[in-house]
Length: 188
Image 1 (cartoon, one colour):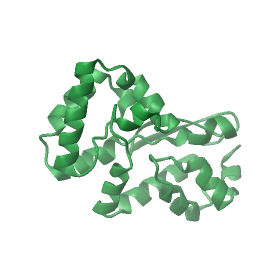
Image 2 (spheres, rainbow, N blue to C red; image 1 turned 180 degrees about the vertical axis):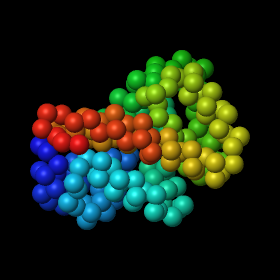
Image 3 (cartoon, rainbow, N blue to C red; image 1 turned 60 degrees about the vertical axis):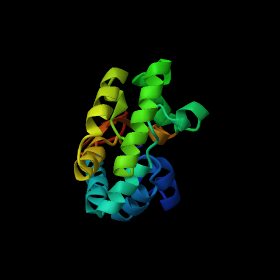
Image 4 (cartoon, one colour; image 1 turned 90 degrees about the vertical axis):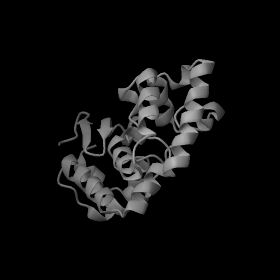
């Protein structure tokens, strides 16, 4: 499927494909659908970034609140999205010792109490020791610093429906660096 095929997706199909570009935030693709046609994948990326950048601070905090706690109740209960489960597993969040798990739970609660949203870090780019260290350090920051940092760290999980449609393979780093890698037939 090329970008032309993406451009003719119905609203419903577009939201189904891109509904988890940002964790549990289908509002983003629902809004970005109106920007079609996209001349390239880069144009699609730009539309997503422009929408997010235009959100008021409360909207950006809302995006952060959609993220689960690392090694939190959703991981333990098996209710994480597939993408979040894979990301947390890559970082070792599913294999914490009892001491690490207790520390993570305590720091997660401290962070949420201080800032009003969960700690967000691109887990797949970190190991559990680094995540615990960052969480501990970032609990000391100011709210505006953490809101900005959380938005910058928020992984975009564009590969939500990649396997089903064979359209996108995404390597996501942060709000600012969205790298869509094409599969055969997708023109950047």
